[in-house]
Length: 140
Ligand code: HEM
Ligand code: HEM
Figure 1 (cartoon, rainbow, N blue to C red):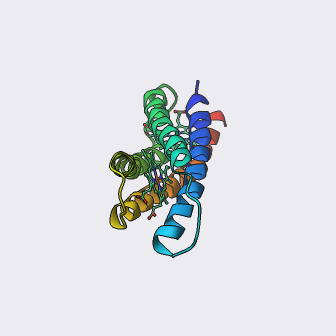
Figure 2: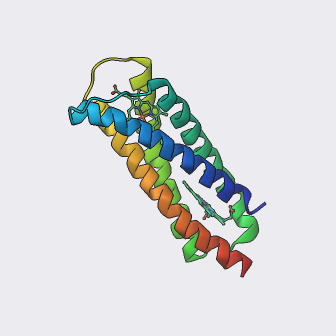
Figure 3: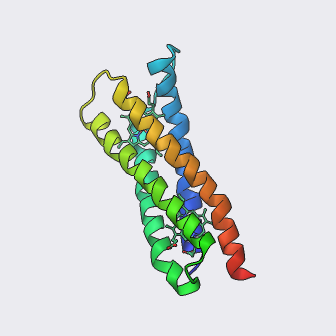
């Protein structure tokens, strides 16, 4: 049971990395003047799965934790930062929805969207480190 959350999160973080790599192509053409191909549909598809999956995985983490841990400091720092990453992804998901539903030439909103999701992803990558330590503190 304790592994459900880590396995989900690692899988969906990998999807977020794919979404990031696809989004980077758009960033390069939008802001750096590079000639690139942006896989719009593919980006929206993996990005959506990544964010919905990460939210579900976080809910699973919150639900399962009380069965295994007292609320100690390491649990709190992993848990609290996890909520911070969710806030970034929430901004990323809602801006992504607008960008996809009402397509037009834009600069600022894509930048807010890309920044929020990239920050969320960086925090999520850090969650792997703190989450692994949390897991070790349980098994040892
Ligand atoms: C973890 C997931 C995601 C990451 C890391 C990500 C990242 C990015 C980045 C870096 C850009 C380029 C922004 C720019 O040009 O300044 C972008 C563009 C875009 N993203 Fe995402 N994104 C994610 C999820 C989503 C989702 C869930 C949707 C839709 C529901 C979405 C829709 C779009 C669209 C439509 C654009 C192009 C916007 C435009 O240039 O008008 N993204 N994304
Ligand atoms: C985006 C990535 C992640 C987020 C947002 C996240 C968030 C959370 C949250 C909110 C909790 C509940 C903490 C509490 O109630 O105090 C939790 C628990 C936990 N997390 Fe994560 N986490 C992420 C990734 C990971 C990863 C990659 C691992 C392991 C390598 C991990 C291992 C754990 C463990 C062992 C627990 C406690 C028990 C359990 O639910 O399995 N987490 N996480």
